[in-house]
Figure 1 (cartoon, rainbow, N blue to C red):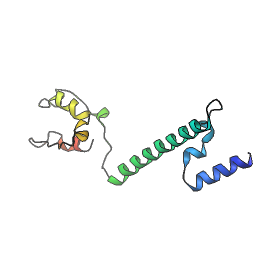
Figure 2 (cartoon, one colour; figure 1 turned 135 degrees about the vertical axis):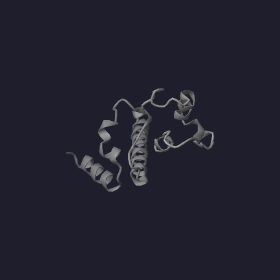
Figure 3 (cartoon, rainbow, N blue to C red; figure 1 turned 90 degrees about the vertical axis):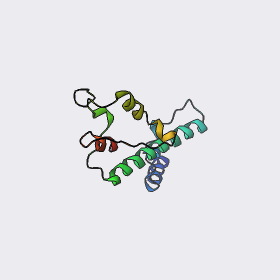
Figure 4 (cartoon, helix red, strand yellow; figure 1 turned 60 degrees about the vertical axis):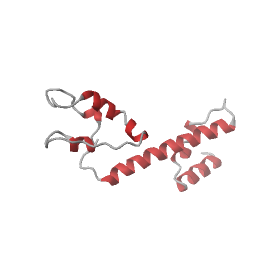
Length: 117
């Protein structure tokens, strides 16, 4: 291992820059220095965002992690559910539009399940 590579790995570990610790995966000899640096920084940002999301989910303390992928969409199971509205909710456009969502209905219809997704 070269002296510079060892120094880069130690500095990346100390600064908690995991992408920089694997810099050789993101460096291309055919690209200029600025492009290589940009690719490396963008990967570090992506990894930091992913770690931040995982940490928030873990700290939220959800009893179970549920996603729409695991949700059973059947009219037999949920005959009163409007699937067009469900598909609209799944786009999460209400977040960008800064709209509130209120689920109203009798008990046992799965509103709590939706709130945890």
